[in-house]
Amino acid sequence: MFRLGWQVFRARLPELVSDRDRRRLVVVASIVAPVVFVGLLVVAALTDGITVVGVVEALLFGVAAGGFAMVFCRIGPKGWAIPPLPTIGWRTQEAIARYYRRTPPAVAPEHRDVVLREIEVSRDLVVRSTLQSSFLLGSWVFGLLGGVLVAVTESVTHGPVFLYAPIWPLVAGGYGVVGLRTLGRQEQLRVEASALPPIPPAPPKRGRPGGPSGSKLALPGE
Image (cartoon, rainbow, N blue to C red; front, side, top):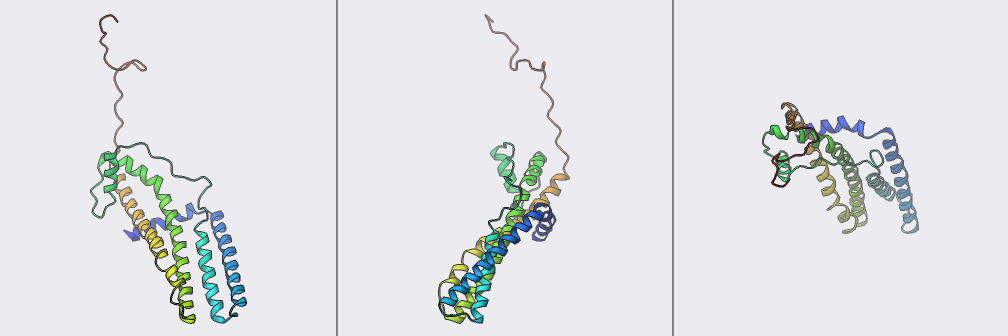
C-alpha cells in the first residue's frame, strides 16, 4: 500500500509543483535559514562567545527554521481549492468511507462514478499535504539534532529537546504516513472502479418536453 502510494506521489509531484513553486521554496528557505543562523551567532557572541559547537548548533537550528518556513509556502496556483463534489446521500458517504478501511469491500457498481470523481478531486490535495509534511519532518530532525547537541554540550535537561521531540514528529509523520497510504488506496480504488462498466444514464421520463408533471386527471371544476 505504502509503496504504491509512494509511486503515485512521485508521479504526480512534478505536475503539481511547478518550477515557480520550487523556486519560491528555495528562496524562502535560503532567506530564513541564514537569518536564523546569523542571529544565533550574534546572540552567542554577545553571551558566551562563538565556539565550533555553537556554530554547528546554530547551523542545525537555521536549517530547521528554513524547513519550517517552507511549510507556509503556497504550493499550487493562487486560489487553488478542491471543487465541491455533487451532493450525495449519507448512505453513499458511509459506503465510500468503508472502501478506505483495512479490509474494504469491493466497489459496488453504483458507486463507480462517485469513487472516480472523489479520487480525481482529492488526490492532488493529498500529494501537496504529504509534501508539506516532509518539510515539517525534516525541520524536526534538524531541530532535534541541534537540541540534543545543546543538551549534551551545555548540560541542558529541558528546553529545546522537549520542545522538538513530542509534537512535530507526530504531526509530520502522521500526515506523511496517512497521505501515502491514502494515495495507495486511492490508486487501488481507481483501478478497481475503472474496471467496472459505466452505469448507463437513466431513461428520460415520458411526456411532452416542458409539459407539467404529475397526474393528468382533472379535478371537478377545473
